[in-house]
Image (tube, helix red, strand yellow):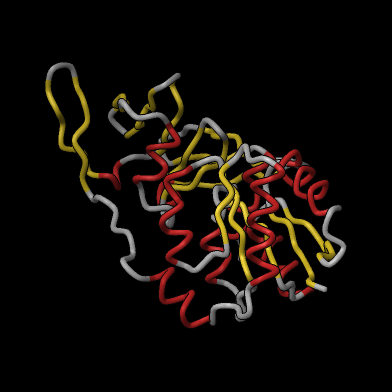
Length: 242
């Protein structure tokens, strides 16, 4: 018998894995989580042998979840984004399921788990996760008419989606990026720029105050802008509270 945890921020993703697991009585589902913080709690509590782990989640990625664990279980990553495949195998994941995947593909991944004789050690995984740590730009070039302006990243107060583009908002106004907000998020330091809404990213160094309500937060930025934190992204704000 192997104990299993499912981690996915989408209920449909968790439901699909639950349904597929019904064919494997030797895999016993112990719990589920829809974000990184709860995933860490569930893994520490149940000490699973296998985790189906989403990669892109509000507040904390699947890779970041692993760095918070003392003991690493076997991991099958699942995501809709294929750019993480190489890194997933660098941290010795058992398999990498690219959404949408078939029942046959799920079966293939599970068979790899059942045939595996050992689990990678914490040291190996952690070293792989931290190796070649990504660096982030301190200055970027942004469009301003026909010119490119040299902009210090620290001067970006917040970022908002604008269709297929993004607005980088500073004290002086805004600049339009050719990248969508998801791509912008990938290229900036996640320790400074955090997603608080599917359409909003904030610079935590530019936060003036946070108003807490029953089921949401409003973040007031230094330039007076107020950004609503959606429910799915509230955990990252909570992580900053002491």
